[in-house]
Length: 179
Length: 169
Image (cartoon, rainbow over all chains, first blue to last red):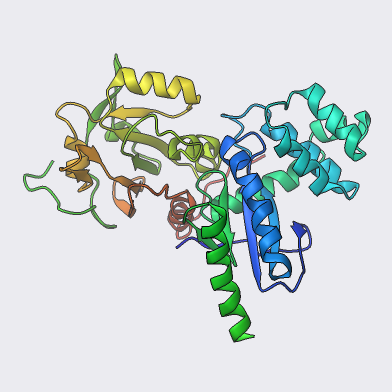
């Protein structure tokens, strides 16, 4: 059973309460169609779980397959540096079929990342963070995108809303019973 | 190759059965050619698995991590060389895919990872040391891509006991 080797910490992009009983980590690629399919599912799951869930996104760009994935991740990290990671993340998944540089520049200006800041991101300013997400993912048994971890354990089950909510609730109940 | 075939994946400590398989229509690769450095054998069921989570695409992306550990990666399935060539080109793979095609699955059989009923090999991983001894093996459920954490841990262990030769920079 593969386990998350890098615990969730302050450098992660997280939504939800810090003391939520269950944490869902997604390793994702902005250009991966399966991550695109998972995106509305994650939103629905967050909505249903409410305060019980903390959701974390980590970068896992498969650049050999997805030529725009790295730059999309670089934009999202640049957005994070101005406090707008989730806005950029959502915008990228909502427009997965438009990830050319001109598109990324448009999203950048919409989330407060100007052309110069985006250029710096494209030149590698946030690459150490992206690479460390990726390497940590590999060491944790990430086997494609998206790969999900529930409270640190890789989830290999079905990725529909009901199945995920059930799995998360089970873990949440267990965690709350122990607390 | 031994006369009796193993019934399950060869475990750590076993000498790796030798083989020579085509990598392209006019090139063959032998395990002996790869001696002197760790080798990762990744048996997989078939080319063209229809997901981004494709195991070979993942290994392709993390090839630099394998190379940093001094290891060479080869993929093996029962697909033929032309199929491998098309698959490798489409996925932009930078490591050889060997065709265990004729006699079908013979190498997979010698490693104990052929699925007789399905006519394909298991999703099985072997890490072989520089001297040709299997140091780690793992068979994943067919539908589950095993990822690379086990391979990297095994390579770490290979590197651990003896001092690593490092290039002066």
